[in-house]
Each structure stands twice: as structure tokens, then as C-alpha cells.
Image 1 (tube, rainbow, N blue to C red):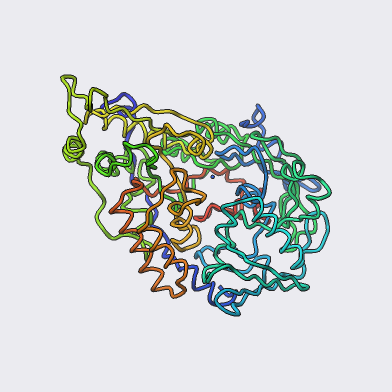
Image 2: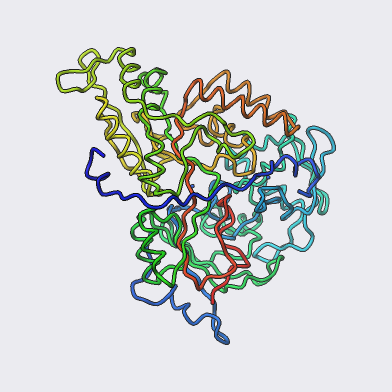
Length: 539
């Protein structure tokens, strides 16, 4: 390695856990319901805020979870935290096989290509005690569509009609994957009546949902205090209280876990896994997920509109080194947005680093090396701004590795670390490329990522990508209901992405979570949606 950062990285045994064979969500959609991104804790050595005595007669059971992304709001229709932390729920959910299963809806049927009828579970109440019925779900969807442009774009609802426990939804166009779209955390069902009573600002600090836990107190960007909802429809939670603390510093999360201040710490850096595994009180879960770490190119910048420049950077990306030296075996090199284990994933070989090929492309783009070896064009050095963020501890390391390899090819990359990466990328125009991460098949289907990342106005399309070829194939995908056809069209979209290179894919990372062994009935899921549950417990 060419920098002191990389000389310090040590290789560890390869720990990749192969992805589960995934069943496509569309099977569930067509079966009518049988199957769609603070403080580190109080000081001291007590486990999880005094929960070390949990389980004793009359003693409240408590758990502390440390999460890697801050949240300044609990707006249920513009963020995943309320659903992830057990406050809200959706009509349908994913099971461990990534099949769509009933949740707040017990069944659903398609009357025609645009009309869906959902039967709402009859035994559910919101956390304020009011009954969940179809009218409440309709009001929640109306609120969500008004509050979130990305949700409105995904659901494409033309009209709704509520009658008792039956909700009829008509979409603006044929939408065979509509039930799978309802897995989206932003499609969570909340009490609009409670919001009217509390006011929007107060409600977004303590939304009223149907989940096993309700918000007791929320300190924006610091922590959420959750308490059990005693009348939860699917069985009262085993825990009395859960404290969710936010901290984007991976080392702080590790120390909190080791000290006993946290019971669960999300996204542990790979270099800390060895020391945690030596601690008899702890275990580490490294689970193959549905995520990819990748590079975003800002094609609003003239330089990044040049395919040869993007391809040169792609050839500088050392995927094998990222998987081995940065992720220490907790990832595999990527060859596209979707893992090759998925039916619609690319089967092409992984791109090998090619510095010579990168320099040749940059020379073809008009850049020449000076006496110092640095590339320049018309007297201006080739200098790029590379954005990264700490929420996923490996991303700054990936940025440093790319910076080092680019420098060897005569390209200067200045790394800028930001806090809220999504806000920064949308509100600032001067960045050239960014390290990023997203779950690309959270519903067992590629449609979600393709629509949100490449369609104009998509929730993940911060660079404003607008490819006619991609829009065409994604449009055909959205209208397709047959599984085989959807696989074929998704593969066709992947082919366009490889040809146009709007993004470069680095690795498919594992979800690495540190857990105190006192935690029982819990494991991290590949979908990353259902973290706090009514079944999780402590000894």
C-alpha cells in the first residue's frame, strides 16, 4: 500500500457468508397475500442502563441499542427509523426468505391490473388505543403521499376507497409489484388523528403507530427512549424498555459494547471483530446482506459527464483489495448493483484494477502527465472532490484506498467527510464522486433500486441521472408481472448500467453487528428493516 493507512491494515481470515437463495417478491404479490439510512451511552460499567438484573422478579427488562446513523426527526413517512425500531408497521413485510407476507393486512387480491383490495387485520389498535381500520390506513397513505415525493412516486396511487376493514387502491398505471412497494418503511401506517391532536412537529418527535414499542422520549440526533405498548396485537413485547442511541463513530460503538453500556452495536468496523470475538460476553454477527458499497458520479459536472473519465475511475477501483484489506473478508467484490447470487445479478467477471488502462483513457480525454506525474488539461490539474461519511466505517477507508491508487495514476482526489450525506449530495453541486451504500434488493426484486436510483426524481438519484435507455427498460419492468420477464428486464437494465457507467460498484458487504450474549431471541436480518421486535429478550 502506498499510504500509512494501508500499511496498518492486517489481513484476516475470509469470513464471507454466502447469500441465501432469494425468492422473488413477485411470487408473493401474485398469490394474494400468501406470500414485498449522539451519544454513546452513560458512563460506567453497568450493562445497558442497569438492565443487568433484568429477569428478576418484578424487575423491568431493558436493552440499549447503538445505531450508526443519527436521526433528527421520527417523521414516519420520510425515514426508516420508526419502523426499524418497532414503533410503526406496514401492511406487508418480508420474511427471512425475502417473500412478501401479511402484517397489518391479512390478505390482498388484484381485481384487475390497476386495482388492489387489502383486508386490514381486525385486532389491531394504535398506541393511543384507537382501532386500526381501512379508513385509518387510507388517511395514513394520504398523509405519506403528501409528505414524501419519493413515496408518492413509488406507490402511484390514483384513488382509494375504505369500507370497514377493506381498502381498495387504484393505481395510476398497471403496477403488478404494488404489494412489494408497501414493504417500504415510508409506507408505514400511522394515526393521522393522533397527529391532528398533537400537531405535526410534536408528532414527528413521537409518532403513533401500531408497533410493539411507543416513543417515551426522543432527543433528536442523540437517543430514543422506547417503552412497551401493552396492548400490542401480536403479543406483548418481552422487553419493558429499549433505548436507541445514535453515534456515527464506529470506535465509540465498539467501546460502548465492550464496556457493557450497549447490548447491541450496529455496523462494527471489520478491524474490531477479532477483539470482540475474544470477549466471552460478546458475539459478532456477520450476515450477508442485500447491500452494495459503490461510487456515485455527479454527472451535473461537465468532467463527470465524460464516460472515459468515469471508466478510468472504475478501472482504478480495487475491488479485491477492498474486500480483503478493508472489509477483512466481511464482503465480496461486486460486479454490478445486484449480487451475482440473485437471479437477476450479473454473472460477468469482477473488473480487475487496470491503472495503465485508466491512464490511457484519461489521455484520450485530453489529460497529459506533467513532470511531477500529475495529469492536467489546458493547464488545469485533474483534481476531484470525493465525498464520504462515517456512518459506515469502511467507506472512509475505501475513499482513502481509491485516493491512494488514483494518485499513483496522476489523479488528485481530495476527500471530504460529511455528516448527512444524502442532504449534502442534493444541496451541493461541486462534488465529483462519492462513496455510498444502499440495499439494492430489499424486497427480493431489483425494481426498487432501479426506480429510486436511476429514474428522474428517484429518492436515491442525488446526481439527477436521466438515461433514456434506462428509463425505457425500467418502464417496461414496472409494467411486467411475470417473474421470468422481470428477471430478464432487470438483467437488461444491468447491461445498460454497465455500458453507461453512471455508478461503479465496489463490494457486497456483510452486516456486522456486535451483540452482548445476554440478548436472546434476536438476530440481524439481511433486509435491515426489523431491528427492534416484540420477541427480543435479555437474560
